[in-house]
Length: 379
Image (cartoon, rainbow, N blue to C red; front, side):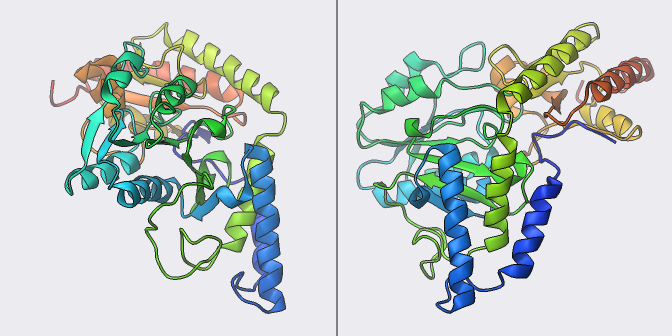
């Protein structure tokens, strides 16, 4: 099998599975319980939180464990807006956000909040002049992801943060799901940040919202303190501990791994440029993601054709909806490219041989499908 869909989810590292299984067996107590088994489980969670905080450069008390980035995004956005709506109801975001950001914003717009989408330049980067024009005294939230999940555009978070700091009533939320384990991120630049463990070889069903200590938000789930007053429920000890393990492992030998992925990326792009494809990712994108478009071939057709060779890529993000990629359209302003996009995503576990095999089979399929006239029905 050749897996090239790491941006959708990653296979769980065997060492993470071992940690998860051990904690399931050895720490059976409810961390909220006061007896010895509960206290032991709670201490293990606290140790894991300290480890996560040390890796990310934050405080343990700033971690709110969630079921994943989608819940974390909802908690950040609704939590801030519902808590501070007396200060204003204006929000700024981009067209490149994940559906778990766009959907809660859409909900808020129905109950009186005003949403503005900042312009993007020709590279998909936030237009800072337009951003400064949009932000105002009643702006209470800016939600902009660090890295787009489909094209891979890396936003200038430091420059955006600098502008927001001029407005003390405005909070900055950043979905860093595609950054964790792929690039270094300065959490001091933002007020809230969301991520999922499944994106860095951790378990599915766990993530976190990083929230600055001084900020108060309205919880989505009420019913007890748990590890924090902002998210009730019995703490998932095995998931939390395994997340700490996954995070530690993914940052081992980090610089060398990044250089290796960059080498794979450059080779892949160089080979793709020899074919009849448009490359939508640019020099402002992380090397882990290469987004391309096939003009006369349905992306689903190519996806399933590759599947016959046990090769797996993505069309749009797994959580997206609609008949074309909103992110590709936002970057290219080309509806045809956005309707024919395919995402290839790499990791440090991807081998050069896998990429070479993919290129060989992909090239053959492009010729075969183009000759057969596998065109999009909308053309």
